[in-house]
Length: 235
Length: 122
Length: 169
Image 1 (cartoon, rainbow over the protein chains, first blue to last red):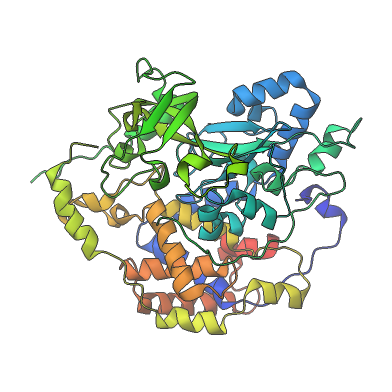
Image 2: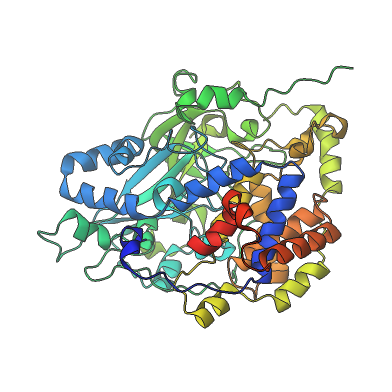
């Protein structure tokens, strides 16, 4: 998000129409509050917090690790501590001060090597390192991705445009308990002498999940169509 | 008639400012397995809730890391946090999980975290 | 988990009784067909934001429903001992599974996050947390409020981020 320079530009265009979905969202929320399932205050506090989240801190963590071997060691050893340096406090940063139903306080940073490529999934639901990476993309939440990536990882990665040679081990990290994961990829060639800002720009959300590798010049996630699951496993 | 009291604040009090799973640190004793050990995931019965995936049950893995201490999700989901155990990050070979996984990609693996009571030495 | 409290087995029965009825809901079917999705609206109005302004609020509602920290299976409290409606919190993982099932069954052709919203409303109605009629009535009052002429809801705007986000996000 480029909210820092918002005030320099005229206001962005708005949708001047209330859709049925917008009404439904508000209606569901208000009824849930009226029925005592949660309070407006808790919802406000949480929503406000969620608005502050995005993939930038994780991208910065990776860029810093590429530039500073000591920081890299810390990141791999203690992701929670390393997160502090990019402004993410896994414990006290959240409104609850201890984590949430789906955001526990254990970040593990998975270091790729030229012969090891990590990719993250949550086969059971859709656990995601939200405090440092923001909201998960829809494809990450779909049964299609969750069921197939542990079963046919190379096919799924190929659908993202990532074909890996046989001598590279693909390691699928199934996020099923209290750790959350981001991938620390190999720094690509052609980035010699780059600053932390320049490096952080090519560390996209998809790179941090592990379905893409960083490339100079590529600063956005590829569009991914969401398909129905085929050959589903389990559930 | 007195209603039984459910202490819903217990976890909040324990974890605030410390974090979860950090708040269970030091409660599990000595880990039973070491990094590098071969272990098998037991196919234990669970009612309603488990976070031990079906596809790893019965499979053999290598302990990659001893990660943290926590009550297992299977108990915690019932608010039972008395028994705290070690969690292990395990690496499974794809070819051990899926019989038709191609041999030329035999290096490929899955890594996931499993609590100690699900594991037996091989 | 090898020692099973026999009380829990009783609850297994109740759990089955609560197994989700996944038949279509008329109100939601209508919205599915008539509602204008963000993909359409953002293109028509030239808005760049890939997500509708209510997406984070929806996500937040799902989190709040999952309970303060993790949701114990409150169905394991006998009905008469549930202290408040919040004891009927929807467990996070169950809700996710229901979302997957309902989306596959009814809402596969609706884009995201509209389909997540339809699935959530579906879950809540079928679990008896709100009725279809209540939801329809609430939608009517919300819609009247949102479509009110300028100024009338200024105060509400301050206390309601849902409305504020509409402008800001």
